[in-house]
Length: 336
Image 1 (tube, helix red, strand yellow):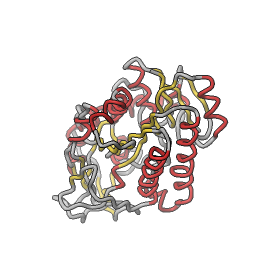
Image 2: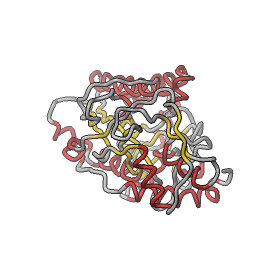
Image 3: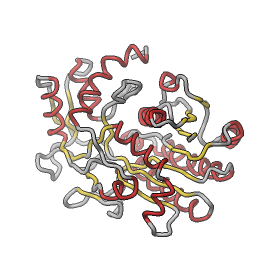
């Protein structure tokens, strides 16, 4: 099957492309390279440009009329940056997504898998959320994902589109085959910062928020290996029609959480990391970042029922893969 992957040169998008190829599918990458890496798109069909570009989208489908599904990963994703630059986040994550969905429908691509986020949820008492748990986005980034889901849902209701919104929890790790991994020069995710601290590129690790109402005061997250996330996208593509049949609600838009079902605090992740490397690293507590929340973790019933998917890889595997990626990243990317 041929699949359009927007943001296919980014951390998650490139890993999705590798997972698709491993299952015999052919990704067609559309990326603006605002944050993506050309090194992650070698030997793949690649179009450089904006997801909102109608003419470019039409050209892609003219040249690849057998594309059966689109996976929309392209987005700006850094929560504190979204607080400082909300306009950029709403334009890129909402307005341009709307244009993309319209252009997909115009070009006859009816199946859309949308990269959403668990950041859409509000705080819940026991931290576990289901797909119908109350929403409470606390940053422009999170609100842009709520809006993106709503835009897709409305487009699906009004047109022949069908959409599946995958709400990611906290991706960590790297492609176990070391084809891609975290690549941003200014790393924002927690495991990347731990690797930076352990390698000496940073003076230590800052625990941002130590007074949350959790078992040890640090934020609670559902850390899911990026390869598991990528595999979930493959399942969403392969079982797209079946998922709607199984849901049997008559809806044209589905929401599915992608997590491990296990809540892990930041302190617990740090302890697992230190065990993996065999030593402690310097740590200091700091205030929460703008837009941070205490956290949530996923209930895994829906992805198993609709996609036959559950997370298989452990936090320890993710840490190991992140450390291996740190060793090969410079040789692969050249400028870091």
